[in-house]
Image 1: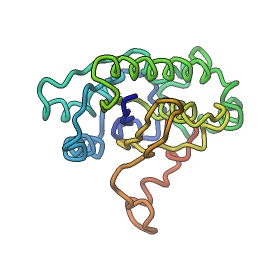
Image 2: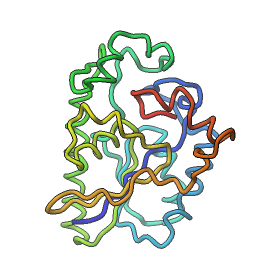
Image 3: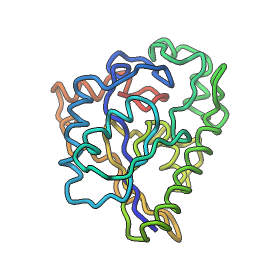
Length: 230
């Protein structure tokens, strides 16, 4: 089967403001996220991509735009099934406020039972994104062969669900997985799924104490169990 490069969108204005963007319109990349997107063509240089599949939300389209501009003719598809989770009434609220909601305890400890008011359940989100990834992987294999490499750009919670499924983890364990913005995770589906790489940003600055990068990636929003962190 092909190799999937699973890309989280770059950092957004909602990420840097500590908001749960969900499907709110008009949420684009912030300055740092735009720089992450601009660096993507160089990071993927030399990798012959068969196709790019992305969530239709603005932040994902903006993330892959420099890559598509760098590779005219590369097939690109907006896929509704890998859109962000529908957080319903939680959409566009501050993560610090949501941390006080009673439902957050369920989101943290038993996400398979979490249903967002007026929105979607995490179980339903997981089912649709995993089905979409596996459908697209089979399609890429049929059209481009088992040695093909393709890229999907989607959202933090979606990536957590896809990786949990690939590793055979129960959804209740997916909060242990933290993909940073603009990180690349590589998966290979076959007789059994293989996690080849996780959360590669090419930047280890977050692990240097007392630096701007460490403070950025240790922010409260990053530790939030919804939205994937900032």
